[in-house]
Each structure stands twice: as C-alpha cells, then as structure tokens.
Image (cartoon, rainbow, N blue to C red; front, side):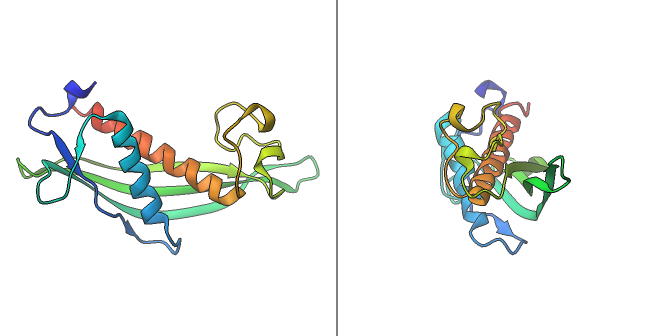
Length: 163
C-alpha cells in the first residue's frame, strides 16, 4: 500500500489542528489520534514542519450530538456524538495540495453512566458490553475517542491510496 504514496514523500508533519468548536481538548485528541495511526502504520516518518516532505493540516469544523436511537416508550436510549474535520495534505517539495476533504466520525453512548453494561455497541464493532473488552470509561469521552479513531483511520487510508 505504501507504494501508492508519491515516492519523494518520506515524511509528514502533523501540526495541532485548528478547532472551530467549543469542545476543549478536541484538537489535541484528534491530532494525537492521527499521529498514533501513522506511527502504528509506519508508512511515513513523523517529522517537524521544517524538515518534512509533506504536511497534514486539519480544522475541526463541527461537533454535533443528538438522539440516535429510541426505546419502545419513545425515550432516547442512545446518543450519537459526531465530529467533522476538514483535512488538507500538502506536498512541500512540489508545493501543491495532494488532497483535501472532510472527514466525519461518530461514537454512540447511553445515559447509564457505565458503557460496559449499557446494552449499546458504543464503538460500532459488532460487540456489546461483556463481549467487548474495550468498552469502558465515561460514555461521552469514549464516544469522542471512537469518533477520533474513525477519522484518523479514514485519513490514513486515504493517504495510502491517494495515487
């Protein structure tokens, strides 16, 4: 897959994203999530902006949160937390945009306070509660982490299949 990246690009800078929302700490979470995805994949060396061959810039455009599913009694049983991010991957050496796009990710959570026993597939992996060993923590924070991971994964996939 790494062969699809332009051959002269060996490194990428990923500066802190701009945040146009009121969500405190979200820029750091998304930036860290993207860096972690790149480190795990090992396809491009993470570098500073002065020595990188390319730069990935992002702006958090919108955060939305609202009812996702309802019970038979028509009360909200699940909420959806969604993040929209605008991304631009710029080739520093050839001084041109490689691509830009808007990425979205979401996570679900209930109001029970315990995502390990809320009956919800919080990370959309097909597993619920006792069957899912990574569902734990504060519901809204977990939903945020799921959304961030999805965005980071989608960005990495697009970078690997750009050419």
